[in-house]
Length: 462
Ligand SMILES: [Zn+2]
Ligand SMILES: [Zn+2]
Image (cartoon, rainbow, N blue to C red; front, side, top):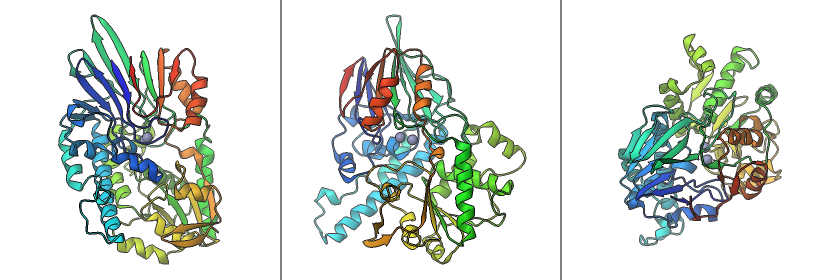
């Protein structure tokens, strides 16, 4: 069997792993590179395989760094099946369409800026279009359930296990049986951890011979969740008390719903003001919240208890959805409110407008509740910049800053090591989806296994 790494190799984004056995070609994820410009340029490079030849794409979850290059794959002739959970299919639809819109807008903007009419210049062509994203949807097939094997080809099956990372997320076991012996390769996907809101804990992974695992936080331990929720409430209460706005840059998927869930709990338990005004200023996060509401089968017991009482887990009395641009712009006049907007790393989206209007105000606060990659605006602010450049304007950073680590959607070092121990002593472990330092640290902690840290396009016989 041939195992190749065509993304998220010694970095976090662009997940794309390739498996070939007896002429059956399988991809696990086809994600987009995100972050620094050089990294994003990688999206325009060759996949490292022929998209036409791929039979199956097994999709672990709907984050852009896992599904973002699917429309590109389809544009280049992919005609296989994309197998995933129903919740992931719905969320991926949203993510791919949003990404296509951004690609189209960016291409238009670049062409306009350079005042070029030269349509043959490829750098002004969108990576893919809305049409490509829509076409991708034709190839999706839902799995029946977690932990039910899906036959792919004679002797080859794939089984999805709940990864507890975001709604519908999975680890995927690929098994192939040949001459009576079975080889089992487990792809962790992105891993969550126990006790998070809304979604269940990650399932116990199956025993395997080879594991390909994420290592985002291989060198870090998270703060625990309870103090993080307290810190969120404290940040909101003190900022609202001085009539400042609380900006929460947030990923549209999962994190926004998680924050809404905790804000509802805070209001219910009177830990936050009953008249708290919250604006979810992201059409994508609003749509994602609707998708969450359609997939209660992915909820954990606590969230089911909320539903059983007839309550909506994401509903707060003072919650407003700002879908239209005009609604978003009107927030400029607001004081003493909570604004949740994308993007999580502040690289694009409405949050940049809110930062421009609030970052220089002493009474405001910015609460970072997610991962901030190197080179992103969020990272620059977190790292203590005194001024930042937003829309070609120097903005002073005077607002209070909070970095609340406990809301991560990823397992931390201890949880990754524990998860690995449950995979039944695999002979080989390939670390992906992490920066090198994190991978090396995690690798040194894994016992009874040969650890590999593949480079981009590296190929192994397994
Ligand atoms: Zn993810
Ligand atoms: Zn990821």
